[in-house]
Image (cartoon, rainbow, N blue to C red; front, side, top):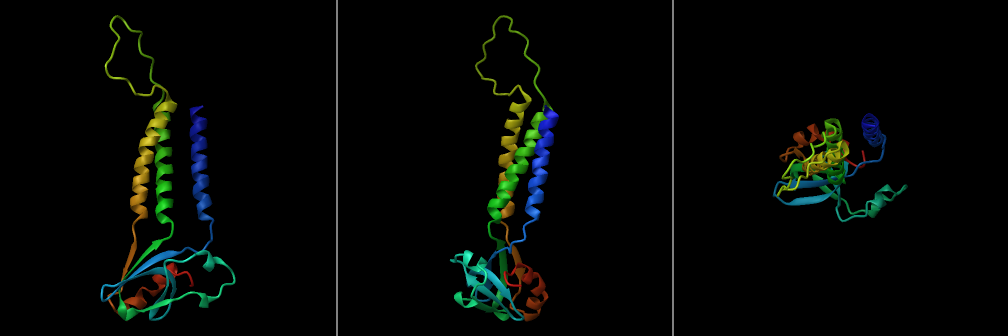
Length: 195
C-alpha cells in the first residue's frame, strides 16, 4: 500500500511537470524602466527595436492583446530610447502565484514521502500503575499521519521558498549606453511580446 501511494504521488508530480512544458502561449512580462533621471515607467514590454523599447502602460486588459487579429493602434505605446534608460527590470506575469504553488506541491510531496517511509510507530506497552501525563502526545503513530504532518510542514516551507523565488526580477543594466542596449537587445527580445 505504501509503495502504491508513493508511485502514484510520483506519477502525478511528473505528469504535472510535463504538462507545464507543453504550453506555447506568449508570455507577458511586467517591465519597469528606470530612466537616467531616476523616474520609473511601468508597463508590458511590447517590442524591442534598434534604439528603443515600446511599453504598454500597466492598467490594461491583457485579453485585448490575445485577440486575433488585433489593431496595434488601440494602445498608447510609450517609446523609451536607449540613451534614456538606466536599467530595465522584468518580471513574468503570474510568476509569484505559480512559484508559490509549485513550492507548496513539491514540499508537501517530499514531506509526505518522508513520512510514509518513516513507517508506523510500534504500539506502546500497556500501562503498569500510574499512566497519567500532563503533556498530550501529538506524535502521529501511523505512516499516513506522519506523512500529513511532515507534508504540511515542508509544504509551508516550500511555499515560502517559492514565493521568494517568484518575487525576484531580472535586471538588465543599460546605463544610458546605446552599445550596451544593442548588446542586450537579443536578450530583451526574448521577453518582448512582439518579437
